[in-house]
Amino acid sequence: MSRLGSRGIALITSSLIMICLACGGGVSTTPGPVVTPGIVTLSPTPDVSLEIGNTVSFTAAAQDANGTALSPPPLISFAPAIRI
Image 1 (cartoon, rainbow, N blue to C red):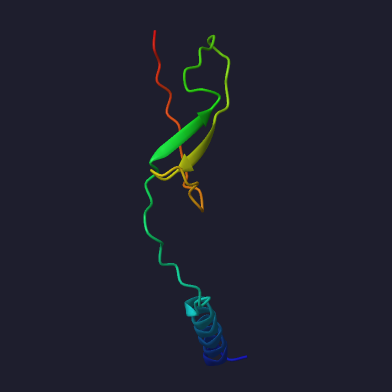
Image 2 (cartoon, rainbow, N blue to C red):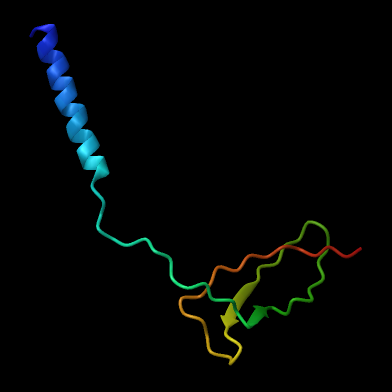
């Protein structure tokens, strides 16, 4: 195949790839409203004492100010408060 032919095939192939990548899935990615929990319940209770090297797992349940569970539940992260 001549040099011009292989460049043409490469150009067509890369164009088709770019067209495929540019096509969206048609799904909206607009985020919903931001909901701030009014009540967060930790289990076990948030006042936990541990020895060095031990761990404990917490679960959280988020509710609005009226006590209604938030759906979908928001992502809740934990940061340890170290008291010595």
